Image (tube, rainbow, N blue to C red; front, top):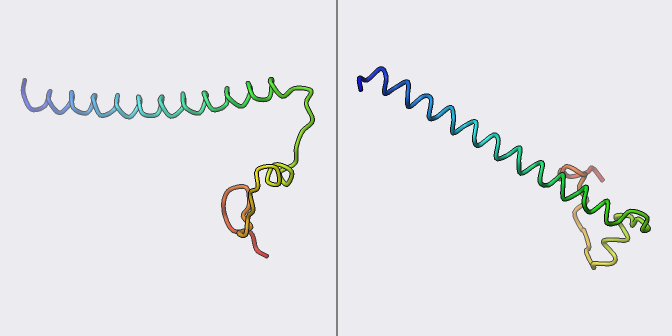
Length: 75
């Protein structure tokens, strides 16, 4: 193989690896979404709990107020 064809093959391999990585990430996201849908289906018709009720049930206390995305909320 000459150097030009080696470079083309290497570029193709890198491109395919990036595509595989993106597909794996998307599959992981889809599995997470499926888990959520299954949990909602199991809990259908059951009373819903607020965030505070869940924290109280499991004894979780939060001294650091944070927003949904994990950033600090101004006090």
